Image 1 (tube, rainbow, N blue to C red):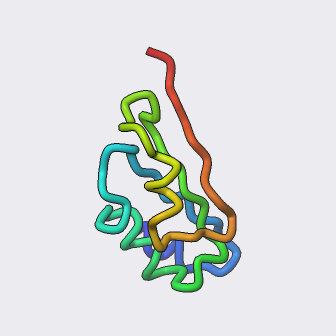
Image 2 (cartoon, rainbow, N blue to C red):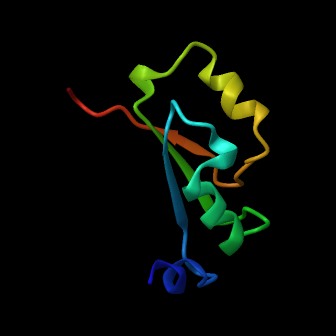
Image 3 (spheres, one colour):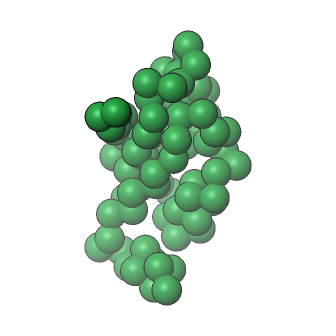
Length: 78
């Protein structure tokens, strides 16, 4: 069902993933790459940043994600 919505060229795709997973093998990343292979309408949302290991910025920079809309880091209240 969601594929119908994310394939639309006017849709911005939010790829939500926790900071403690491998970004390149995340299911959300794989789905967004199928719908937006040139990554021009995908925004990465990284959650649980308070539980991230040191070097999370390097982890983001090292990956091939390079979303044109960039990343947003989110920390929920506990």
